[in-house]
Image: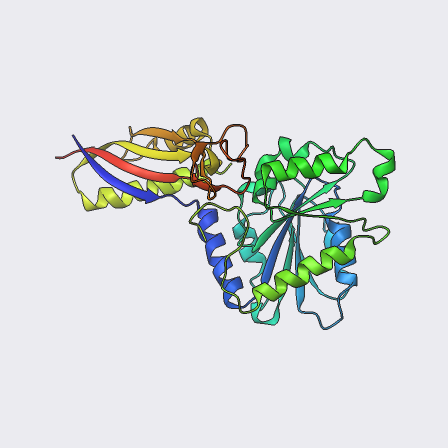
Length: 233
Length: 115
C-alpha cells in the first residue's frame, strides 16, 4: 500500500465556470455585480430606480433570476436597457452556468455594467460565484437587525450592505445601529448605505458607490475586494 | 451546498491519477476541507459514495480532514482560531485580520495498492 501526495485544489464545476466569466468581464472591463437578498427586500425596486437614473446611452444590462415568472424582467425592461430573465424552475440560486448561458447572445464589448439580480434567498447564493466583481446584500428594515449574525456567509462575502425601506423605521423594531454593528462584526470591511427606493432617499450614495466601482473596473487590474476563497482571485 | 459537483471534481482527479497508474487499485482518497469552504463533510461523503458505486473504483474510501478558520492580525502578528465568526484579534482587538486557513478544499493524497 502506498500513499501518493497530491495537494490538489478542488474546484466545483461552478467555480471553474465562474472563473472563466470573471476573466471575460475583466477583459472587457465590464463591472458585474451580484445582488442578493431575501425575497421582497427590495432588489428589483432598487434596480428600477437605478435604471431610471441612467442616461439612455448607458451601456448597462440586467440579468434577473427567479424560480418562476418573468415579472421582474418586465418591470426592469421598461427603462429601455437590455434585460433578460433567468427562470430557474426550481433552483433557489443562480449559478455560473445559468449566467454563462444567458450571456450567449450579448456582446460584452458593448457593456460597461452588468447587474445580476439573484433569486430571493439569503443562504444559497453565498456559495455560488457568478464571476461578479462584488456581491451586494440588500437587507430591509422589516427583516430584523440580527440577520447578519443569522446568515453570516452572505454578509461575509458581500462588499456592500444596502439597508432598504428605511421609511418604515418608525413602524418596526429594527435598530439601524445594531444592524450595522452586527454586519461589521461579521465583516469589518463591509460598506453600508441606507436607501428608500420608494421615496428615492439614499439613492445618491448608491449611485456614488456604483460610479466609484465602475471607475475601478475601467482599466484597473482585477482584484475584487469581496471575501471569496482566499487565493481564488 | 454543491457537494455533488465537488464530489464529481474529486472523482475526476482520481480518474486522472488512476490513468497514470494502470493496474493499481485505489483504496482511499484523502481530502482537506476548511470550515469556510462551505462544504458539509457528511454530505460530501454521501455524494462521493453515490458517484463511486457501480464504477471500477468502488469501494473507495474518502477520508476528510477538517480545518478550522484561522486568522493573522497584521498589527500584532498574532495568529488565532476563529470562534463564532469573531475575527477580531484576541490580543489587540484589531478588526481587519487576514484569513490564513479554513478555506481549503484539496485532495491531499491517494492511497493505492500496486499490482
